[in-house]
Length: 241
Image 1: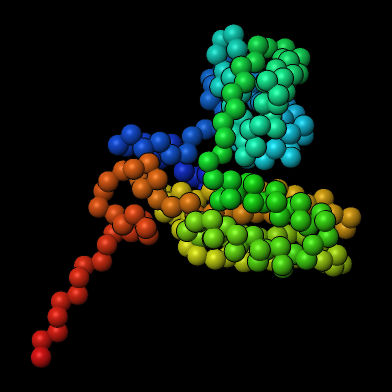
Image 2: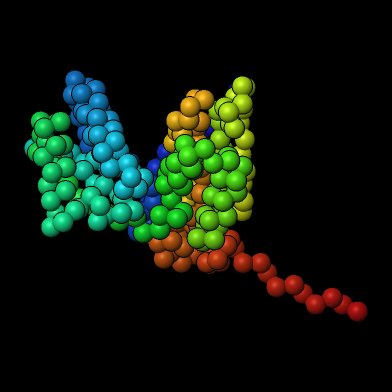
């Protein structure tokens, strides 16, 4: 049996010591057993609506917080200007549409993705777009690996599954570059998944990106090397002659 764990879910709520805030829940609210299913479906509808309408704006994640009388929706986007629009017209329009969809008061917040080049979800969506344009899957994987490593990632891994190259039999192909320490909890490993809808069928795309060490990213100091996120090696003693 395959022992597969989603890296972001595996790291939720782990590195909170020394004011280091690591991976957090995408939905932050509490509800009774009776209300929970309805609110969960509502969260799914909000995310699906936003991704469908603004998929071209590069939205890797949508966070949702709930209070008694309002729903706060935080959109993380690589292109905030597209969603905000001229004088904030697009934001107001989206806010009204979400209020109609949910029947609740919506508070919308837009946050820019600092480094979209190393965001796993955006990389997987870019690969999906290339495959839908009939690009060679091997060339697409190689290009994605090189661009991500050049952008400053510590490691990247890409895996494609489906009828690759229009073949009769579906198969899985992948490639990796650098270091991907999936079992090291203090390593910030981002994960993204998307599907390329080709004429031959859907191709699943998984991307893992090692963005570095949580303590180094948050400015923590614990005697670890800033570049490699590892304990510095002891100097070698001179050999006795």
